[in-house]
Length: 278
Image (spheres, one colour):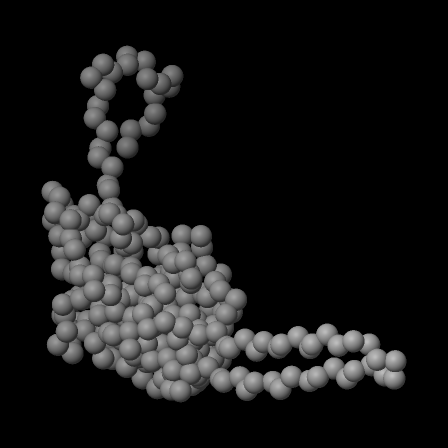
């Protein structure tokens, strides 16, 4: 058995997430820490998007919807948030208990510290500054279910004829040892194998892409635990893309309503009283 490198412990908390959260096995939302609000999710051509505001710190909030433990492997911009390696789901992850929540606020530096996530221009992103700018703009969570512990079954005792002298004793069954949970080094390539596909630009002009920076260090306490995955591949991969509002408008993700055309037949009496001029 292998130890999961990092598992949620004291830092984990119960998080109340909106119905708009993404995911089935777990709820995932992106929370803007500067504005203290959960970012709304835009769905476009089957993909999920949020608007990032340059300079704002954010966290990835995860809540386990299951009655059993799950392993969540998190990546940002194609980089594993725990190891700092290029994301691969054979890396470390956070273990969440039944209905437990946890906020991933940054790149893990130790069992006690993280470096805050913040939206920034692509050249300042952690991925670009470590020579890996190709997958900037995507957050991913790969989720693994825990391997069930073996079920101990008992054979029923044989039915014996009732003796006049005494009842036959009930034979005892030997209990089998239950093995503890095992390995779990897992990492989510945020988008898995999916690359950043962009819709054709509209009349709106695009600006520089956003990435995630390596910010201030803060306390985030976790500990080691054991976790044995039920499957070699994730049970679910949740992918959330992010960019500036301007870029998402240009890609057609966010639709800006056009200005209403003036009525070709204006009314001669639209109001009863004359308003003050602006």
